[in-house]
Image 1 (spheres, rainbow, N blue to C red):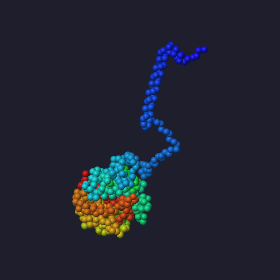
Image 2 (spheres, one colour):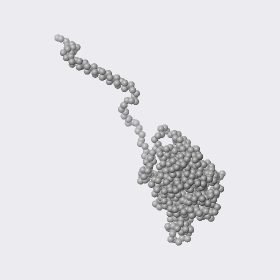
Image 3 (cartoon, helix red, strand yellow):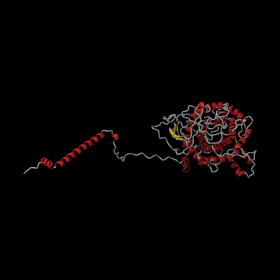
Image 4 (tube, rainbow, N blue to C red):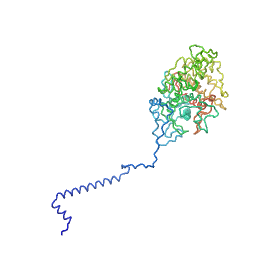
Length: 564
């Protein structure tokens, strides 16, 4: 039997079918070549860095702990029906910084070590930041004034402040620290309250005296006063700067600080335009109205216009009638004219008219300042109201430039009350009289102004050993009156009164500001004055910030000396 040989079979097949064999041989060679190329190509890929390779991500283990979603933003202080209007005006109110590449130490002196400014800009600002100058705002003492102003008609306008940056000017730094103190003590609902300091302060070292009986009767006025500090510095609800507080190591959005305070006032406003919770109190009404008017003046946001105008209308209706002119107007007192007139006009009460005409220089000056802020912000103020205030202050003025609290007979007399152990500065009334005349008449040639200025210069700001000479209220109105009279922006520009007063004011005021490191009180004016018994350190801090903003808060009422 013959054995089968596979090689012999292949050789015979090749002899009988030569083309088939050649075709198979060629296909084998091609396949082998392609295989070599494929292997070499993938070998070169394996030599590349691992980061180039596309791999399927591993499945997340069931034991991996995923981060919780961020907590929702608390907006309880912003009523839903009005938040939309404000955000529609400025869609970037809630924009936060996204360019912080490394952890920040917000307890640094300037807050952010990566910034050269205490204010970190998060976008185009609606304001121009702030600034002041120990030398009265002159060009050589600090940043130049911003040329942009409010939209009020006439020469007297609300300014938008100046650039602060890392200003070496002491008054600039004092204003900044004062604003930080105010932000630190703002309530979550946007208000500031004398009675709520216990909730905002460090209980171990409170800013207030626990023995003081501080109530909520004046919180509307205190909230307005605090807001005026931010508005006077040029900050509105549209501002996008972050205010860094190194005491708390926190950032605060200045636009939200202002917005929430203004919204609280709007919510508190009564249907008649007043703000006080029970019966009207002209200090509350004037300060709250002034804040809303200046907010409208800075932004022209329609949301602030109606409540501001309602407040203005209430103040004008609250003005007392003139006892010498049957159709004229007079000054203001604590309560409104309506509260006296409406229930008693037909009773025949002998004391009715006496009470109806009752007015005082202090309440009248605050009312005038509210009406002036409204006027220059584009709101409606009647001329007869301003003329009536002027007639009242003339009635209270003596021949030597002294002004009485109630009439000319009381000129030079002390206004008595609580804290009578403090020194009473009779020139306070002269300063109030100057402001009423300046802001109602705009007459730099009024002979009374020099007479009153001489009274003020006789009693410069000083700190006595027992500190009973401190009177922040007097220092504020003295600064405002003399800066307007012959400060750097006045057509007079002499500095005869202002320069002397300004140096004494700065020397007295700055050392009284608290600078305890990492303390709740840092930046505030904690030492009280004669009038602090109702507002505590909220009043003293806010009024002193406004005093240091007198350099740039208003343009001159006489229309001179604009700085570029």
